[in-house]
Image 1 (cartoon, one colour):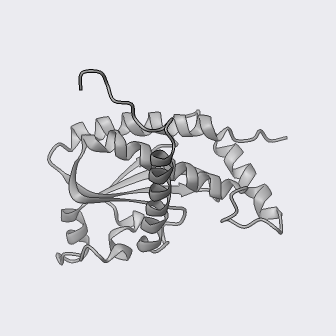
Image 2 (cartoon, rainbow, N blue to C red):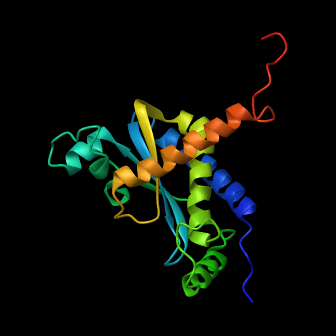
Image 3 (cartoon, rainbow, N blue to C red):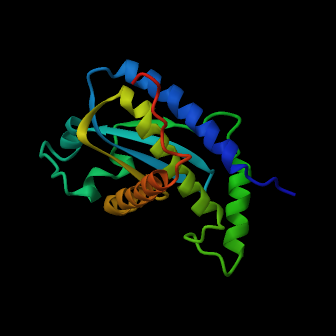
Length: 193
């Protein structure tokens, strides 16, 4: 019988992997200015999690030298067109087989839908959103970023960018509302500050 996925442990693993990878990446790209990141989860075929980063210079070069308007999220957030990819699931600790088994079980359930919070696909997307939120507060700050640096979360590299940007924005807004409404999550002032 396949083991179940420990989503909390997986989130901690991916945050560790991303933090380390982004520290190394920032040191290797001190002058690059990034406009966006895509957290790309692959639940169906060899479960994986990747982080894609892109610059305006690369996006323009890929668009035959023409700048891509900031509101053209479809073109700006296609993971396959991003210049840099950090594979966060390369570690032996990544439970790819368990994720695939959980997704397969969900696919066999006629009542399951990818957008059902009980499914592994949904949980993987939620995990990617939480990871993006944590990185936005920490490791992404090591990079030079545009003022409108945007994060997207997708499960399909062909998914329209506006959809994957909206997915993360919806999660972030919910997380910020929860943080403001819960006294336990509000940072306490430090003495003398």
